[in-house]
Length: 184
Image 1: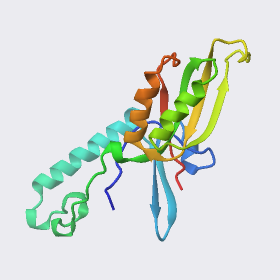
Image 2: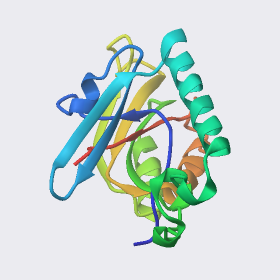
Image 3: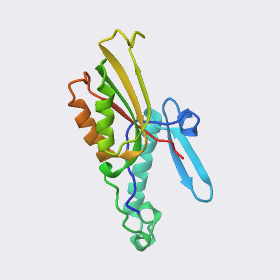
Image 4: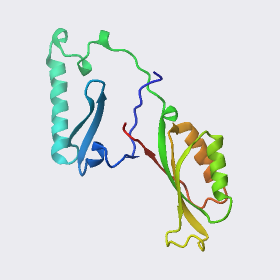
């Protein structure tokens, strides 16, 4: 009701989803319909031949549009203008998604409390936390890696929380963020 989500970015998805099996130069679109459920369309999406085919198809469409009588022309997107309706596009800061976050922090008491306090102030619920040293000796390391998985939250809340977390003196690296989708 608030608008259509339109976004392109790397996203983690569960390995049991069909989309997770798309590999190599293939592209895929997952469509969910009330009557059919989830349907995956997959095909070549990179390389010389798929690109050439796409460009040639676009040129044919342009020539057809220019040489066809306007009264008998198939309209843009195959919909008559009277059947089209304006749908708002949801601004990215309003999009809700879950997040994978990774950062390096000082290995001392209270660090996690500072980070979770920021999350609480921005209404961000944590699904999981993993803390470990790369060498497996977290008790003697001065810095450790911290990985957090969040539940769904608006992008604007996560952006604000990340800015505050990165400003903490106990944080020793920029935070890595990857959005996660369940595709349910």
